[in-house]
Length: 185
Image 1 (tube, rainbow, N blue to C red):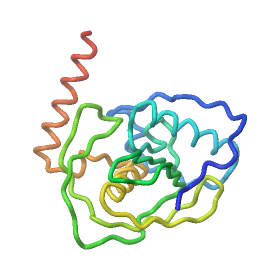
Image 2: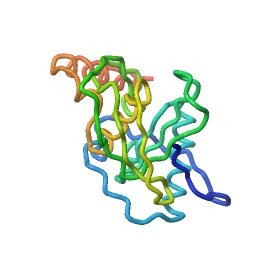
Image 3: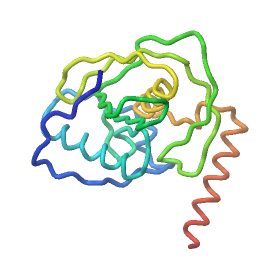
């Protein structure tokens, strides 16, 4: 089941700036969406365009500076997924497997940093689409991992919070160095 962005014809689409590690909005729990209107549809379209432009597979609203519980995902052709995207409003993990798996993760808000993160191998996520229609996604593999990653963003949690303190310090040191180098250029 795919979330839909509703009828967005005539809505101007913009590629938004992706918020980077260190900006407060990434650490705040997003607010529940209560109004399903053209403003939400516009936000969703901007998020999709921003995600595609950045060549990501998922994006949460806080990553573009909007503290709302909205995320979009599109795995493209990875893992034989269907074409198309998911739009999830107010998503929550309703059920998890007992089994976990470790795999590398990265994040558009922390470019060039990747760490191995342990996630549940299967999840069931409840949400609504951008029109307010309920949906449920049973996922495993990359989709399960991406859903957990994006929902964490909505709770103010980053993937580097899921690794050991030593790995987190090393990743943050590498991030800081890469940011200093980019300022020197």
